[in-house]
Amino acid sequence: GTITCLKRPLTITANDVEVVIGNEAVNAGVNFEGFAGTETESVLSGTLAYDFGGYNPQTAQVGDTFAITPSGLTSDNYEITYTSGTLTVVLPEGLQEDIDGIALLVNEFDYNADTQPPLVVDKTTIPEEVEIGAITIKEGKAILPGTYTAVIELIYTGSETYILQPIERTFTINKVEIDTDDIAGLYSLALTQ
Image (cartoon, rainbow, N blue to C red; front, side):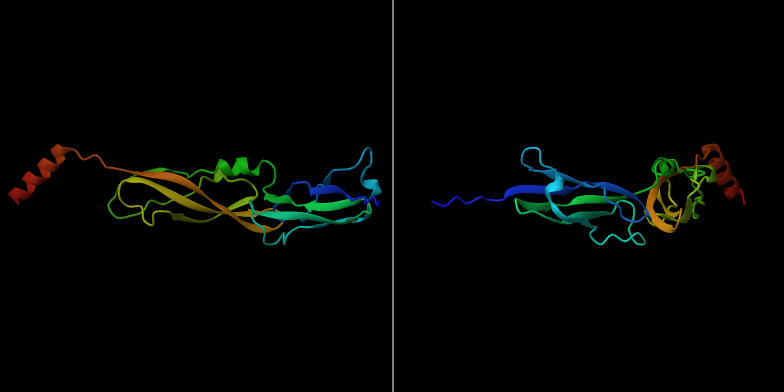
C-alpha cells in the first residue's frame, strides 16, 4: 500500500500592538502554534512580512483598529494558516488621564432669562500637548434652568496635529430664588402708579 504523509497544521498569529497616534505602524512579532516536537520557526522558509490593513498615521484616530496580517513563510512539512492581530491607535502614555482631568472653569450659572452661559475651559486643566477647539452644547441651547452637556473639541499638538475625540462635561443653570415680599412690593407699587 501507499502511505501518504499529510502536512502538519501550523498557525501563525500576529501579536496585538498599540501605536501612538501619528506614529508609523510597528509589529510585535507573531506566535507560532503547532510545531512538531522541538522544532521552531527556523525550519520555515521565506521572510515574515506584515500588512497593516490600510493603517495611515496621517488619518488614523485614537481608538481606531487595524488588522495586522502576517505572511511570507513557507514549509514542505507544515500547512500554514495565518491569523490576524490588531493594531490599536492610542494616545501617548498618561495623556488620557490628563484629558480626563480637563474641566470647565465654571460649571454652575444662575438663570438670566435669555443668554447662554459663557463656557470656558479651565486653562490649568489643559494638558501641554492639547488645544481646545470649539465648545458646543449637546442639547442645542442652554437658557432654561437645568443640567446640560458641553461638547469640547480637542486638538492634539504633539509631533503632528490631530483632531481627537471630543469630550463632554456637564454644567447647570440654576433657578433664581425670588423673594415673595419683593414681588408683593412691586405689585403694590404698580397699583399706586
